[in-house]
Figure 1: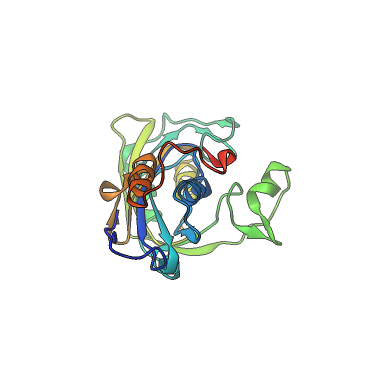
Figure 2 (figure 1 turned 90 degrees about the vertical axis):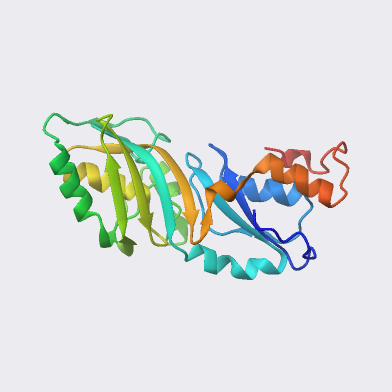
Length: 243
């Protein structure tokens, strides 16, 4: 994490965490807030429950810097699988289609990557936190509603693939704020006249901050509680908050 141990609680700090698989970003915020008794805290960019990797939290007066981190360039690594699709474009929902892959060559994949690199008009997934009519899209999706999603401008300066384990394809993507990796996976499959879903995703960088410098959540909690002289043996006053 960023070393600001000399700062007062009101001044706050910027915390670099490795978000565990299946946790929501709000799970991480609530865990830190309650276990370390922090009054003011927020995260600087959501990660899906099935994604892992760098999550930045800001506390105290540092919460004023959240917009800066949210707007920073992001880097991800992950894996996609060609030939099948799911409504959520990941493993949150069951498979809903199978498609051919025998015709797909490395040259076709490289051509698809080229079309998905640079400045793009991207359509967010229906299973996303984007709001439409004051409601998150994923809530409409779970009710089976059909909605017309508007595109948004995003930038993808780097999209690299490794298809050594085809039909599984590893990737590294560098992108702007608001880019949905699942949408890139969906569009990659469609450009190949097949289908695709994302099987793994890890955020490795936000701006100049790297996952390698992040702490595990439990390690941060233990260290911070010692620093604040909190009784590690004392039960959490909000036990329902434990993850």
